[in-house]
Length: 270
Image 1 (cartoon, rainbow, N blue to C red):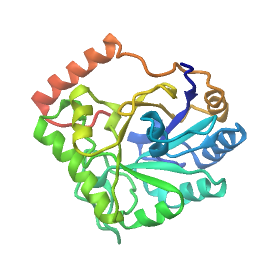
Image 2 (cartoon, one colour; image 1 turned 90 degrees about the horizontal axis):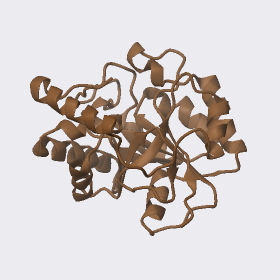
Image 3 (cartoon, helix red, strand yellow; image 1 turned 90 degrees about the vertical axis):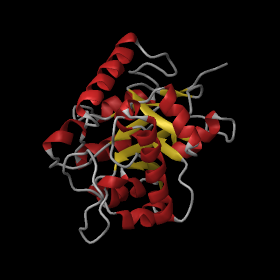
């Protein structure tokens, strides 16, 4: 079987003035435009995460050289200049939204999440995002580390965020991204049981046509990354290719986080 690398990019905020806590994972608008231009110049065909996941499970076909653009959390720029930049280049994308952090419109805050304060988009703008080619997926309610939660709390995070987004959109929301990229076998099983068709992790790796639909690898964009890095990923270079087993360090880190959660309760991992 020929395994084709597929870059799945993970963005957060796109702004020149991010809150300190998300600054490391923020790209400025000028650099973001250059990175999108690198994607467009690569000859790859952008598809949504949903289309990519469908192909992984044999329910669809991919173009010869696909790429997937994703955005986590739901920062305010997404509903404005970021969506504009994508639309100007006819680039579809997928936005995984933390429902407890979204505003309810007219400046009304959401129900609350573990994310520190930041300008967030409005739940009332979901339909307009879809109309501009941005697929909507879930990113839980509070942005908890799902692999540290008791079973009942895990089910609530998965189910409630799905319900909120489906109520706002009027149709099924089938795709999920794990907060911080953290999952486990139990979390992945719970995601399936909750009715999701796919789930994105992080893994800091290129995905591939042989990747796992409930642990799709993504490449996280940091402020130090440039258009040259994106161009290398578009060429299938500069990162390892999923799937691959968890490293011992990853397993150890999960055990440490679970121990902390038993003492301190759910917390933002930073």
